[in-house]
Image 1 (spheres, one colour):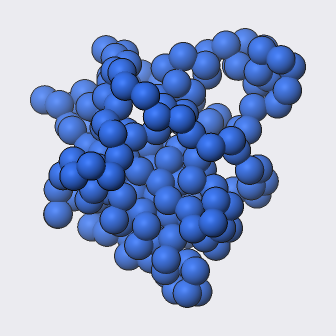
Image 2: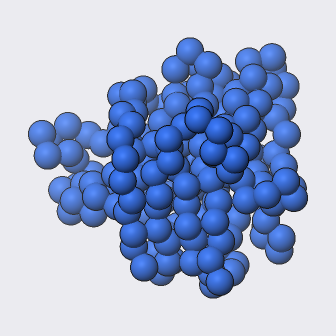
Amino acid sequence: MTITASADGSALGNPGPAGWAWYIDDNTWGAGGWPHGTNNMGELKAVLELFRATAHVDDDLHILCDSQYVINTITKWMAGWKRKGWRKGDGKPVMNLDLIKEIDDAIAGRRYRFEWVKGHVGHTLNEAADARARGAAEAHSRGRAPDAGPGYPGAVQLSAAAAAEPSSAPVSAPITRSSGTATLF
């Protein structure tokens, strides 16, 4: 079986209050965020938490994502960065390293593929994830806890520590948007 889910991030001010969300359907989604973060952090965290929420099942993941930054990080750049001691080709440190290392651990042994979808054009799953990520960012901007959602059936619920802002919150470059699909099965 294949689980199809959308993952998205949001930041008000970028950086600013930030949120993340993954969405399968109205009964199966998760969200969270931080008082201060970037859109790229939210995009990465959404994918990370989707992998964590589905870790107990042996299904393939089909992840719809409007962030080429996330797709390229996981499917193209991460292995090389890891070989270079988590440095980019120019020798500079990788941004959002804590989240990327957590994703590296979470995807080990998993079957997944990414599909880029254009954001903000009415794609049902992407719009649902976007609304929840934006809602989490807005909740943090008002000093409230976001709606974490129902989660994935049988998954361990996201702990407060897992939802906490990363200890180092570097500002990452804005994402670029283009078309494409990355498959790792």
